[in-house]
Image 1: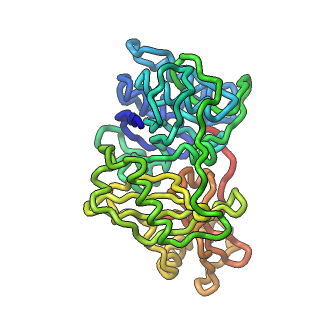
Image 2: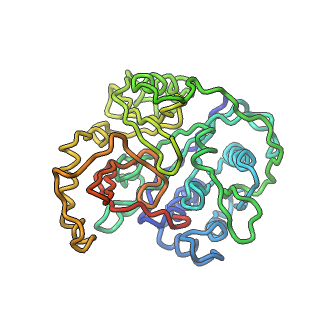
Image 3: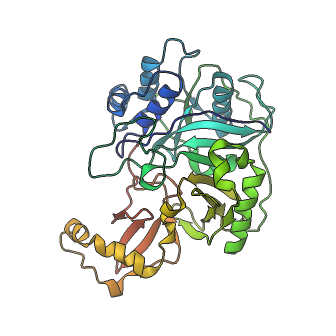
Length: 397
């Protein structure tokens, strides 16, 4: 099974609506245009989008990438809007294989842009129209979360801290194709575009026939939540099955690795849907956070965190959580115009964390502790940020 993972430098977005600019920055730097600033890239993206309700519209991103493309790069960029998930996925594979180009894909409906930097397939594609291979997994650069506030974003360079974990983002993510099509590549509409599934790739024609698809049966029937220990075993087995130790970015984190106690997360946007986040601790400083379906026992995805002591999911004791809520008291009470009074004794912490794609979290690795006070819901993100609601609007964030 061939694996190809392009050395695409990671940079997080400068604010909560610069994902398209950050993706353009990463890909243009990878193909030789240099490390351009996100502000001008965002302006080009937004100004050349037909629909101004988007931060970065698909057509605006296409215009920017071609305008800033180095003259010597082999192929112009083309926005593909295809009618099937497998067609856009094969198009992404071909761009990576043939042009050494990391495509930019629209995920979580129309909310977010990410870079697909690598693939794991059953065979190497022979042409852009080849449908004889299966896609096992992708490697991603997700520019979310945006750089910490308050303060100005740091200048981007090779040692800017982007991708070092927590509020600086995660540089190395691995995602199974099944998770890609069910959770990420969910489809969106755009004026003048016939298909729902979009990515900016090379200009070669796509493969429209579906070809081979994955159809493995899940190991569990889904009638109950599997045991935490089973989730740990599944996560460790997946590291071997997907040969992640062969990747330079993953090798150190897998030396002497073992599973710590997982955290259960409930999907707020899907009925009866849960996943475990399994911390995999190694002999070195790095750690991996792996996601496993909590009902069916299927490995979903994983990410490398450079330092385990920054994996903030380990502060889950109730008193520690409520201390963090207390620290936000002045801001909370100001936001609610005095209509909320925090009383520590009355705060209730849900037994499972929660997550759905939203402006406050565009990564399943950053779920929330759900804390309630009467009818008021509070969402404490695992990096310590507190929100009184989750924002479901916004396009191309």
